[in-house]
Amino acid sequence: MSVPYRTMNDGRRIPMVGFGTWRIRDDAAPSVVRAAIAAGYRSIDTAAIYANERGVGEGIASSGVPRDEIFVTTKLWNDRQGYDSALQAFDESLRKLRLDAVDLYLIHWPAPKTNRFVESWKALVRLRDEGRARSIGVSNFHRPHLERILGETGVVPAVNQIELHPFFQQRELRAFLDEKGIAVESWSPLAKARRLEDPTLVSIGKKHGKTPAQVVLRWHLESGLVAIPKSTHEARIRENFAIFDFSLDADDMRKIAALDEGLRTGLNPDEHD
Image (cartoon, one colour):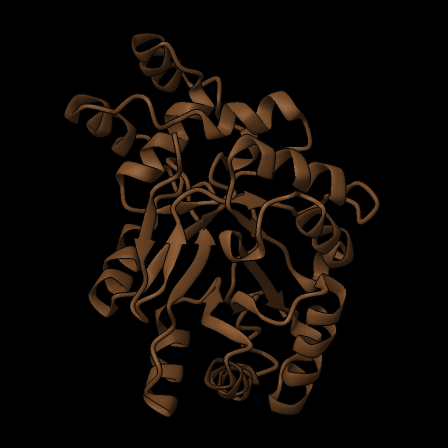
């Protein structure tokens, strides 16, 4: 079954399930990305700091799937923030990916101590207007960061990619994003596999004949969240995509809602330079 799409606030569509490439080596990326695309993924997420854009681009080019069927995301790293440096960093990413444009370009972190994310956002707006970044958004932005770029530019991000999983549900931030029409994309959607043996997830999985990971990814989907799971193992890559043939009921969703414990597996955006 093909992946469903969400329409973003700029009118463009993003697949609800994508493939993350964090910590996939550049030399391994081509074969892993090809495996993901062969499994059915049509959204590939990378970043400058992952140091694998070249390999990701090679995997996309050699997949046999037309470029216009694949949604490609990359991100601006902290040390390149600022108007001119962001434009230069984007050009470098594009060259490594061997693409004329990306479907989504994100500011990876607000890096508030550096305090250049508004300048960077203005550069992304220019890239969008030029058509080289078809959609633009942010990653790891809290409400105050978003309010600043909205107040100073009036341009609403299409996406905010944040850490989000059943054990860190970020309801308050999600409510603000919903109010602004900003799509929520979940990184670390499986909490880095730290809680996949949770009895609630195991029980729900047995009920539906699915693994706990599949239950969690289905929860993202039914919560209206875009998820980008990552794996380097072909069997797991296929497993993570096999979530379109079942649904969670209200009782399942209620039980998963109760798992929220504020478990952050990554950095706090307010503290990350």
